[in-house]
Amino acid sequence: MSEPWEAGFLEFLETVLREMASDTQLDLGDENDDQPKLRCIFPVLRGGEVELPVEITIEHLKEGSSQLQIYCMIFDSIPQAAIPEVEKIIMRLNEFLTLGNFGIYYRSRQVFFNHAYTVETETNAEGVLKNIGVTLDIIVETIDNAYDLLQKAINMEITCAEAVEQNLVLVQ
Image (tube, rainbow, N blue to C red; front, side):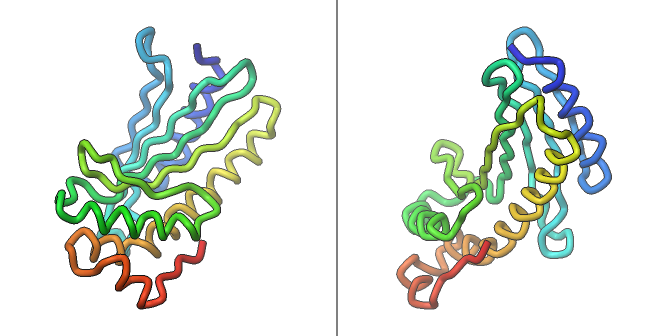
C-alpha cells in the first residue's frame, strides 16, 4: 500500500518535468494497482530528433521508504536476428556503467535503460529532486553516448567483436 507522500512526490515531480518534457501523464494508481506512475516523453537526443518515452514509478517498500524507478525505452521492436549481437553489446556497455543498466525485453524486443534508488521520507525533498535531476542528466548522456552503437547493432551493421575492435568505451 502506498503512502500519501509517494503520490505527492510524483505530483511535484510532474510539475518539474512538465517544463522539459511533453505528453506528461500522472497516474496515481487505484485499489488494483496502487503504484503511482509518471509517464512523459523526453525530446532530448540529437537536438530533439529522438524522443525517449520515460516512466517513473515509486514502489512502496516499507513505512517511510520507497524505491524510485526510472525506465527509458530506447528502441522498440528490434529484429529478432539482431538480438544476439545487441545483447552482447548491451552486456559490454553495462560493464562501463556505474548508474543503471541497459537491457532487452525479449517478448516485445525493446531496448531500454533502467535505474532505481531508494527515497526516504526523512530525506530533504530539495536534495532528492536535485539527485533526480542529476540522475536524469546522466541517463540522457549515457543513452546519447550509446545510441549510435545500439542503432548500428539493431540495423545489423556492426557486431560486438567489431565494436570491441573499434575500442568500444562508454564513459558515464
